Length: 400
Ligand SMILES: Nc1ncnc2c1ncn2[C@@H]1O[C@H](COP(=O)(O)OP(=O)(O)OP(=O)(O)O)[C@@H](O)[C@H]1O
Ligand code: SF4
Ligand SMILES: [Mg+2]
Image (cartoon, rainbow, N blue to C red; front, side):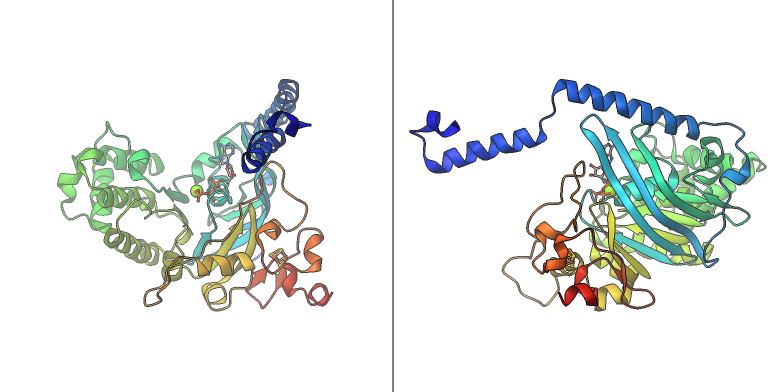
């Protein structure tokens, strides 16, 4: 009987107020409910924390073997959740993909689809105790040992992080300590992973790394503080720090988003060259399909915590299959193609606390068929490398 009190208001306003109330109702959780969720979450999180912080865990518990020895990382059905007071956020909800040795894998998808959470899970840098790897495997070939990172305890993980796997973040200023000189910060990283190095050897390695990333005045920069450098120089320092231990995997999360286009191109060139030099693999996370096209050998397209399509760069750019990937391609500006307005995919990503049990893209998809009302679409192999989760490519379903 809400409309009785609004009798003299305009119909448009009434609809607006009713809609607001409906949204508020949908997101509303009573204090009692919130307390119940918090209590349940605490119990679950404590269990995970206990397992993660165990000491002297026998190696057999986290030692595994690679499915394919040509891969450096194999992620299998990874589930990473955040146990928040409003419910469980399924940030990564069954993600599987491989990173082959010496190759670059680009991960794309719109904001909030779980790209960073996937990479933080590989590094075991999730915001704990809230964020936890709930199930799945992350097999990592460290050379002499294959780890299942999802089961590796904290004390052992310190040997891998920053040493065998390094990470380059979007904003270098937040990763560099503003009160220490560049040289000291690089020295610390190198000394930590090379305890047998003398002081002179550490400094020589630092200078060599600064030169390797294209810093001409390496001895001058060695004595500078981060604020004295430009954004591009700081990102070079971060890359030097990440590569100083010759990692087998470099995770670059939006490494050039904070830089202007010319510096962007230089940094990407640098990453590509250094990757060849130390023969490591790169997991490159970006919104920018242009960067992916230029850098990646393989592409993984994520949507709402799942991989909706993956394949070689050629598969994805020449033959995009999932309606979401096609939408992403359409929303990319192209030189020499005049458009009045860039395409944007209508609608929003579903609420991560209450994911639907059908295709997560269905409410935004303009190519729905009858089968899309069913459960989440299975993976369909279009060729040896190209995989898509969409009913349009399931012969049997598409004919219905
Ligand atoms: N600390 C956290 N607590 C609760 N939820 C989180 C937390 N960190 C991430 N999430 C949720 O996990 C989901 C995936 O986030 P993620 O940061 O991986 O997105 P992304 O794909 O990297 O986006 P972007 O392109 O904006 O960086 C989002 O829904 C986000 O709200
Ligand atoms: S499964 Fe159906 S709803 Fe989902 S992307 Fe494919 S066509 Fe669209
Ligand atoms: Mg991110």
